Length: 460
Image (cartoon, rainbow, N blue to C red; front, side):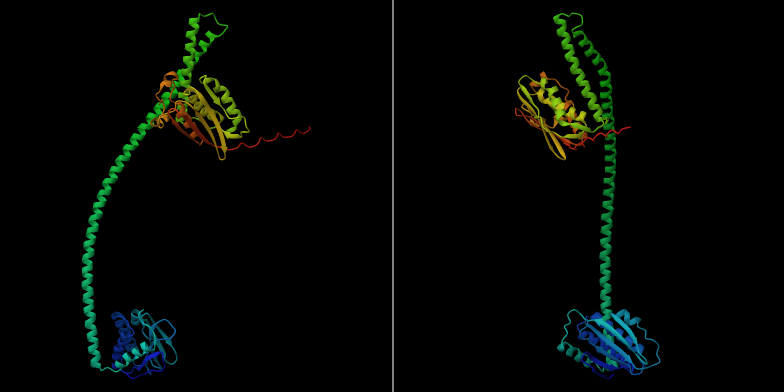
């Protein structure tokens, strides 16, 4: 195996003519890989691949092998097998291709080339000194004896076997650790599965219990609503008859009554009116809870609504209380349910006038699209802080001296809030004992479209 250096990129070049040259090529390839900084595994890959390619091409005319470090390309070791002729079939590249990065065959008449490439390590730094060191390493192993090469291969084989044995032992240890880990994971998975199953059973039982309680609550609520609705209908007829008959007896054209009889009939009439109001409130609340109140939007003149409400409610308060309504202004016409809005404001005004002995009850309206806000404030007795959340419970009444004078149902505020939510708004209340109460009702504001002009009449 003789060699030469045809160009600067070539580290060494050798002729391959005998089997001993192929043995030498294996050793030379390993030396080249070591000189270029490749690790032990890559050294064995390069040596084995070159040995396979040399054995496959041995016998071709003019067979040479060159070790090349291309300049200006990616850092790779390129080993080129070239021959000028021969009767051998196309080379078998599969064994070498499994070991090296790239292996390609470049046929050319009458011979051909095989180029085998493998990347250099990241630690390799190209330069004249590095290339000189690689050439010197190749020259030291250019012509080894067959016995030396066999001994070197034997040492390499022993080293490879030792590494394989160490790897097998490490693999066995890792497998044992993995099996132990798997057993722990399986035990943990089993424990978690049992806990999850127990938790799921508890959740299912709790869900069933909640479903049962919800069904009972729905049945109770429906029964309560049916009771209110039925009792309200049943009471309204006799109460209406009682009030009507009492008014007939008190009418100017009726038979003369003594003063005592007239006083007693007046008491009956007042009690009947209170009972009729209570029945009406119960029926309205029952309809609201049963979802039987239908929102019917229509153009509503807010100025006219407030003026009419003020006229009706002005005489219902104490003599020392002034009802202040908004000043007549160009309030807009809104699309809303006038009847439900009137009920909300009437309930709020009734409460404010009922529990204010002196001072004022004020109503304000602020329109800031897309909302309109009605505010009712009074200078009444107020509500203690610990009872603010309870005033929205049905039939709850704040305890106080005025409660004995003005008896109510405790349905006004809950009913007003239900109607406000039905209209898509909210009702907020703030109060303090002796400082009065403030209630804000915020509702969606939708301006009513302008009335369409009547169509002009046409002559027949």
